[in-house]
Length: 161
Image (cartoon, rainbow, N blue to C red; front, top):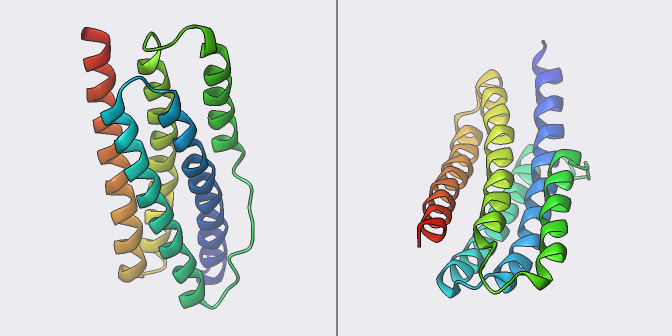
């Protein structure tokens, strides 16, 4: 694969990651409002702010690369978000706390999807021999992995209480 083709693949994947990040960030406040656990809701609010910051960083990547951000729909994240929204709607009669762990599992699934997308971007930055892009993407991946670990711990705590 040529460097030009790899760069175009990277840009398309970055655009899809941005779309998935926007979808997940938009969902987090809804999940936070539905949770019976205020400390987890506060964590989700902080995650929302961190994801918005990651999106601003992604915008600067497009500027640095001299290309428009453009749009690219991420159907995978769209499906995961739809599942979580369906759970939010179905739970209206089951709350206050019976299904918080299911919401956290859904959000974790979304973060796992993010990790997979970021792993692909990391491979492409290696092919592009771009350590500065790699460092930015790696930071986002590490953040998503930390979020997954937190969500697993909290879901387990809720189930075992």
